[in-house]
Image (cartoon, rainbow, N blue to C red; front, side, top):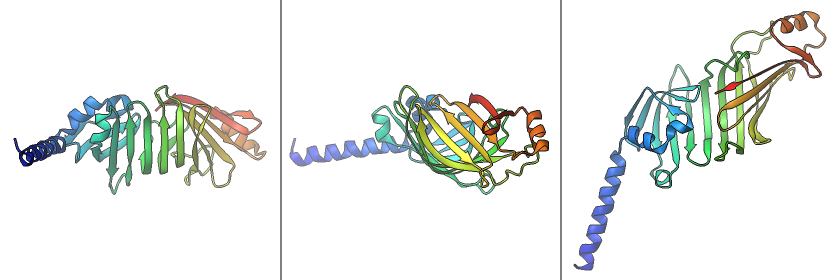
Length: 239
């Protein structure tokens, strides 16, 4: 066999491999990659690994809606999941980022808005906005990297407080957990949210009532406890 013929056989084999990868179903790729273990589910999965669509997708308890998605074939070959997703929806708003699974897991470069189904237990959080958010965990669920910012919007009034402009703050790793230390614009309301790689979270919502007896009574009725940082409501759960 001549050298030219060998070269053409190799080129043909590479082209065939590229064609197989380009047309490989996203549904099968997600199933084999263990994306479900990373918290990804969808009512329906369409298209190929290069140009897929996840209908009514969710990341744990976080509804993503219908998103366009593509998997990194290189990551799949090394036993990892790297899923780029994006959503352009006039009703739900834009959302884009990358999901990582297999070994180190988490999300990176997430921008946009999503609803937070069920809120944070007793804390009625409605939506969460991401600004360059990255959170990565190791195989044991410990936070290894966290950056960017998040903003949480409170769905309902709390004891007459107007928190429609939300609470915002940076993401960081703290004691092996990802943590968001959030505050309102006035700084009178603060929420510390921490979670591990399994999605188990702890939230502490503190409100400074500034010696307002009526506000203190209203917060006590909602389950807040008086403390050194004002009135505090603590809750736990899982995303």
